[in-house]
Amino acid sequence: MLSKIRPRIWYIWVALCCMSLLGFALYNQYVNYLDPCPLCVFQRLAFFWMGAFALLASGHNPGQIGQRIYAWLIVIGAIFGAFIAGRHTWLQHLPAGDVPECGPGLNYMLENFPLMEVLSTVLHGSGSCAEVKWSFMGLSMPMWTFVWYTGLGLVTLWVVYRPAKL
Image 1 (spheres, rainbow, N blue to C red):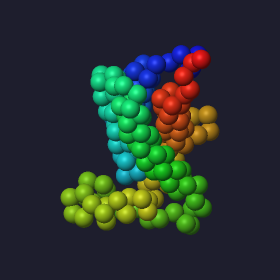
Image 2: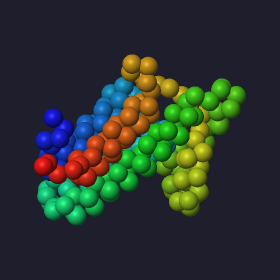
Image 3: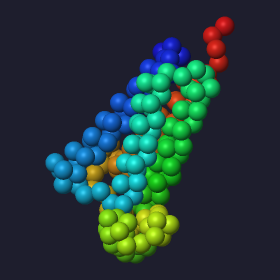
Image 4: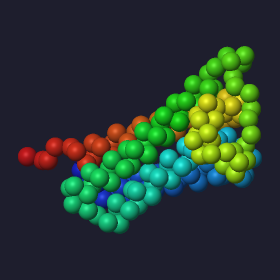
């Protein structure tokens, strides 16, 4: 079935998935009152990046070279997101004594610190990032985002680089 998917249809699917995942995150934030930690915000940015380029690709409907460029732009977002989600998952599995202390909020850091210091602080993690506030089928939200980044990234490459039919 996947072998019949054209890149344009796949890009629409990726954009819809990313929009749905962002919508789910906003639903949890504003309806279930699960405030996102800084790593969650960065994961949202990765989904936004992927969705935006997928939407551009579906509207542009480029040739083979353009499809590959868009695919790699999506995969860059997926790699960034998977890295952040992996780091977030690692923080959630640290023993209680090894969890970093909570730091200032992301808005405060962005207003008062240089960007590289903000990135370093966020990637170091904080106590709020180590707390598991939601899970489904035994996986926390960062674990699920890791699954989505990996799946969307790998299938995007497969759709664009699969061998031509004989």
